Length: 343
Image (cartoon, rainbow, N blue to C red; front, side):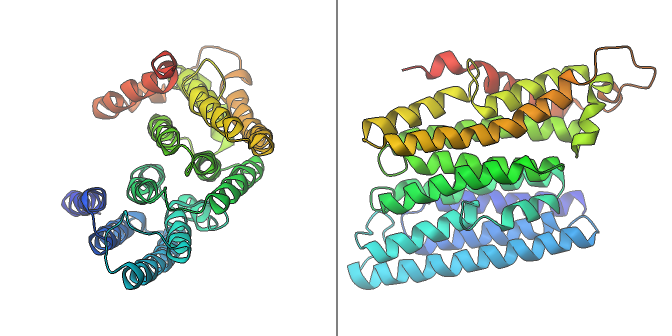
């Protein structure tokens, strides 16, 4: 895909997200979501490979289904309330349909099966776009309607996402699928406190986007796509290896890294709401995710001892100042901003 066409599509993706975040009507929000979904289809399919075409088709069908549900739920709500305003959705049926449709757009269990396949058929940078920017618009709509969302359904979806994300990522060897299941598990943490403490959920998803961005950029910079590639990563990119290990451990939620604080706040909120069994179940589910995070960290930095390499260092050979300017601040914030999040 040529640069001008790519910039045109990325501009449309940005405009669609801005339309959703700034709109107060379901019609404008739906139009923004449609623009956002259609603009990314050429970006996913730009790789001339059958797998990318398959990923584009699955993405289109899933997003179209979710958009139909959004339009259906907003129409029912307008018929009952007489308004298209996003914040007015008092009836349980349209609010439940809207929650299911928006979680389908983000890839939350049980409507998550499209995400690993689409991520596997995309490039690393396109996967970064799908797992970060494409989540902003539906997430804003979910937080806007969180006071009307059914709490029991949100809690069940959160538990399912944490368990299915952990189980699904344990048996994967492709890093894009691992990151997809990691996204599903993190969306589960976000859904746990969606109705009781939406600000904590917002902080959790924003920090996850902050963690995911440098992880994908490092993988793309070092051309690392599988676990086998990570076993030889130390001799070619030692700096990227250390930073990637810290990012993965931060995504796992290990203290004192940044990813620990939102999980602690979510567990604290669940206990304060007398949902101790849900808090225990979520904590046990996080151990499943911790398994594949630790496995990747072990393969990255502990399997091969430090030694001198006789080959050309990929990290220096493919140095891109623009990419490094993006990686450095986000990687530092992803691992060292824990003191600023403390209450």
